[in-house]
Image (cartoon, rainbow, N blue to C red; front, side, top):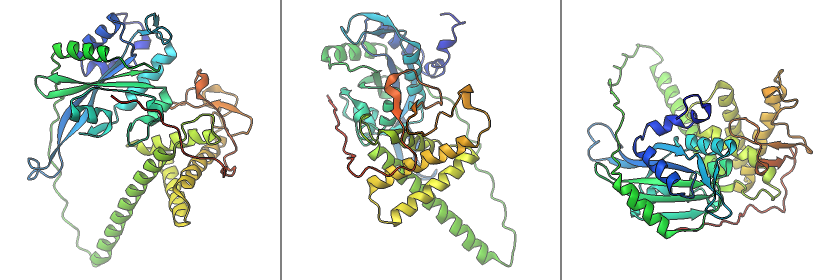
Length: 382
């Protein structure tokens, strides 16, 4: 391996966590022309659901991310046989999807890894970018990074019982049951044995004794109100995330395609565990808009579109306040001019793919009354 090649650094960290099994799996894929460009691994982890006394009784099993890798050569989409070097753009998209997947974990029976782990049966699914959020929870990333075909295969493990190996392609791949059988047999021979990092629990800090005060009752009431507000805020965030995932437009030719950057950017920002102070202020503003629209009796579909529109408008205002152009471009990437054609990217980098271009309409344009949010879904499951 050439240590001077910087293109392999982005996807190397996740691969090291599951070596040597993932390295052997990747070598087999390239040696036998497996028509998939990306692979990741999901392993069961038993997480206590309650305190120490109830840990043994309330332990739940979740499928956790255990590493991913991207091939160097891909099988052509036309004939399914000709090998060609994977482009830098495809490699960037696939490794970005791998970084996106690291933030997920699945209960048994939920998501593609959870369903495969529960049933013990492989699944071959196409057009996952059009799948509803309840069926393929990473559909937002599939739309963003161009993932179209996903195959999940359960593999027996000597120390955890079963793991799930998942293959991804940016092309439409026809179902091949013989290939699934060969992959299952070959990877079972490798006897994957996941190992975990050692985490030291230093215990909880001792509680600080309360300071006597004459306004104890008012302080307790204030703390209670703050906790209730925090819980209400958390509930609203989950509601907005679910709402955006449910009504996100998937047809780039529809009249609502111009709002897709607002849907995806807002949803991904709410999913992040940590945000900057500017992003927190934007989140509070969006939650206020959500409460206002909900109390006004708006339909859920209208609320989702208006939230995406408001978020695009806030981004426009924030961009106009910057004195230096982003990445040296002559105009802001989030400018919402009626005749400007821009390309949306999760990391803020301009995309060279024509599939990612959208004609943005003004941020405060009225929502078309004749558009339908019903998307045509095409999913083929094993």
